Image (cartoon, rainbow, N blue to C red; front, top):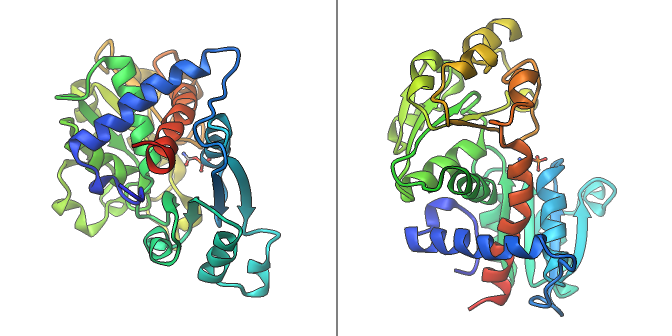
Length: 302
Ligand code: CP
């Protein structure tokens, strides 16, 4: 594997190898000296055309923990504002010796385009509404750590599926790993193509919750919306928000996940977000080990 562009490209063995490697590397995070020399002399460029808190910082930390040199490039404040294209920006950074390029871009397919232009490995850190493979891998890692397995798990992904790259990457990865996914959303927030995805679809959150081992809540991505998709925030929350009452109707050991950023009071109440059953900060911590594993396997491993 040279690039990580889509979870749909991963076989079950490849995905399991990433999760197992992340499990080994997580032990390094528990040590007083957290660095490994594995990627010494290698250069990783973080190329971010869209805002990010978790993905950018955890890719940076992961690369540094493996002793790589890291260049953080943000479109804001760069020559992109003077009209420089993605291709010319990427070729400029490659000329400085990038072995791996981590890219986030608002255009679906940007990571695939980049993979045709540069010699190094390309890691998709989120392209438009298409995919976010490392998020899905860290989500699967978190489910496996918390619940001990992925095979047969019943996972509900709830919210703005239409604009979510996390939903698509999770559906593709989790089904490869033997889990059953149900997407839950109002009809207006489901893509037309969803019937061809390898998962079930429901409009009824209350019907799905008691049958779920994992409930993954998604933010409504207002920044990608050009029209109105539901009558009001209050009505959206009433039908598709997770509050304490709904949490109580989930199986006792079921967990709540969220890729972040969360909008408390909309898709998730503060009570649920702060509950020990919510894994949101655990997902962030696991993201560092998972991204170390991906960088190691693409840039340094055999
Ligand atoms: N989950 C996620 O991609 O978060 P950021 O947008 O903060 O990177």
